[in-house]
Image (cartoon, rainbow, N blue to C red; front, side):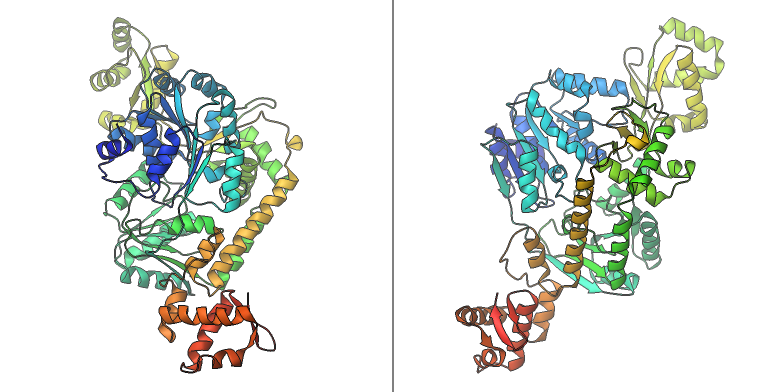
Length: 633
């Protein structure tokens, strides 16, 4: 079958999106490939189709558990066998997933990067017939990227034992430095290919509004722009406050953040995707992997800390190609708050060591051990237990993660599992002698098949409601039966996982790469300054964003607040371009006095010429010195 045949069979699309077919062919040709496609550009199809066309398993490295589970679910709906392995899963489930991939029952195996380099994973992967290695969110491999993850640096180790398997790295946004860094860090071979679409979004109108009363302006925007939307805020508390305020004004809204249960997050996202909720107010936890093309507006209530992050989040609007709006509500206090947040993001080494010491105690981990171990971790409980400030803990954990000492996963729901260890006759005897377990076991045997031969997943919430007992009592009964050798049992789990990527060391021996730490601090400050400049400079918003990604000489978008503001005054877009060309032609020969330059447009209003000159000066095309000489830059 050809790639287009598979696209039609599994995705019911008649044609590929731009560049998809070229990327697929590059992967099929065995070339290391870097694909930069905009948000909503169909990155997953680029590795899923080559994987389906070849014998063996496609290995997919992805940083977010929720994103992995979502893609696995979508593949399984299409009757494509896929599974994911990540921290927090039961050992038996991991073992079974690896076996299925080895013996041909799985086409796509998703792994978190920290799982990839475990001894168990390496041993099992070496037994698999791997046809392609896909690295999703590949910008995470670069320290120049906005979401660097140390575990991504270890992906290249796979080259040692799978030297002939091609890599396909995918991301939505990357600066030129990041593009170069990705290829270097992943050890791309000489016959590599880079496919990059322009980051220009012609249907997306970027707007920055200087507003003191942000809530009132948000309401005004959502009343004027119909259709689905996302509102991004910086902290969890604000998500609930803002959604409640919108509901009071008659707008269908809900809130979303990483601290919600997996079940709650799934329900909210599905309700928003299906149109039952119009507006989702969220932290940056919402949006990765969402498949909703008809988002008409994305509003940021706070200044983002990098243009990469902003571009990704704003780009979730208008994926259907129709007019959409990305609005940033900004005021001077945002800049001060962002700079203050930046200062707190880089704690002192003594504070980091204090948090690291407490982590070892919290996990009851002895010094000299623990590498690769995974522990349920609740940040709020941890901070309260050791009387540490939440912000201090959060920022210290981030440093420990960036330095490669730990990994911290997002929370994900893992159902309970059980297996019966005894014969049917022995189980019946146990039920007679322990009446409290009889109803439970009879219900389990009627509802779940195969428990005598393999592990079975169970829904503890549904089971406890049916039996009219608490989950605690249910788990107590299972635990007692486990201790007595009747069953093997793992309770349900929905807690983020803390992984020690190195053996625990004494806190005083904890090392931080100061040169790298300073580099990250400076880079972070530079990212913030770029975001501030975007919000405060009167230059075409699209041109600013495209210039950041090294797309120079981009045309005026004509639909951002800056372009529309200029057009609403005196000069339309076509006239502006004509004036610009004439001014450039004159100044390239030699600088001119401002008055002389204005007089070179004899049949035009002086105010119109001055408006174009002011715009070109504000946007860096020309410079007017103190003596009013005009120079083309």
